[in-house]
Image (cartoon, rainbow, N blue to C red; front, side, top):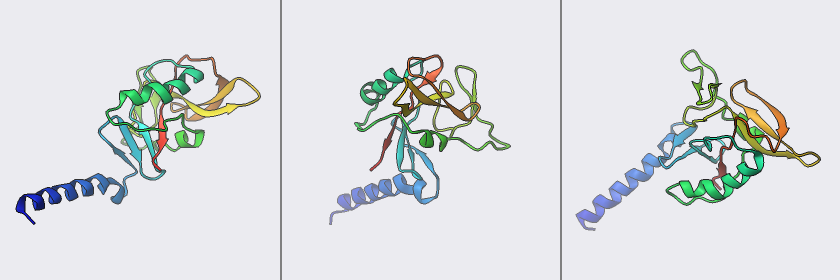
Length: 164
């Protein structure tokens, strides 16, 4: 084997190792450097940011599926709105060192710092089939509630996809 080929294989092996290091070290989240964050615990990939503006549920579904993927450097598929349980899993425990961060709309949100929200209300994929409503999760007060799908004031879309 030539020395140059050996060097290239060594560098490739090192890059692969470094890519999986956060998961091996027990870190739950890692920034992929391409506008996405991987949740190693749940096997999910999240957008690093929300849609950065008021959006109703119907618009949020379309934005997540059709517009958001075009903003990324890499081509990932199967983006969707998250479930309530998935959003709740992002809640960061309040510690002495971290009380969350303030969003553009003035809310103090308690979410993993790798994901930046512009406002604390995030749409879920969960809708009521008997009514024109869907669930919202609030990262400011850490609770969820139902709201009409046509409402948009302060509500955001945060894309997620399954890794497998």
